[in-house]
Length: 240
Image 1 (cartoon, helix red, strand yellow):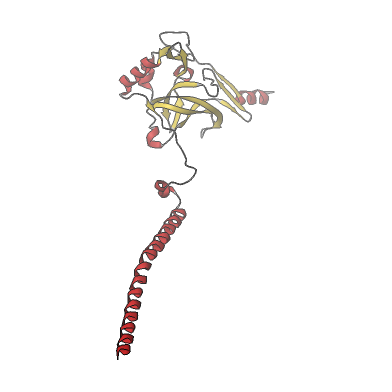
Image 2 (cartoon, helix red, strand yellow):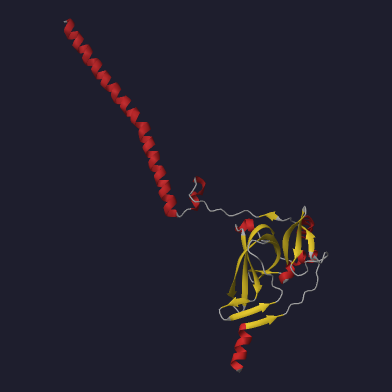
């Protein structure tokens, strides 16, 4: 019976979370970065220390602090504590639940080379259309007009003022189906060398084609000269 209780304690843990209202400006200031994007999917993984974390994957459309242009990425993985993996289950109250395709704005922190959702659900906002305006609505305090709601226009102004840079558009990563002329250097060496060799062979053929008429004209002149000489010799004999 004691073993059963211990097993239950290890596989099903419940953590209560208490949130204290915090101004959006403060969250912007304390975050390592933030982004706007659409939720794609999630999975639970076991970290090096044995704890569980849920990886949530988002398609980014705008961001600040993630350097998406430098790393060439348009998707980001954000970690949250807890999750279910095999016989382990850890539930953490306050972790936001997203619907695939849902548009959100998230504040994140960089810890041990991983992005973590800052302040759990309090650092998460739904992006909704309200009349002619786009509004961010907090997951924890959706009805609080001071801490849980802000227009997108006002939010972008706050970000630019505090971070020193506005939200920048994330460029989607495209992988060409066929190599273009300018992409030859991205191909494996064996392929690019083969293409260069083929181009060289074609060039040599063109050079030979250009040189060939020059040789034909040279021999034609010689032949005409010989023919003319023979014709003059024949004419002299006839006159004699």
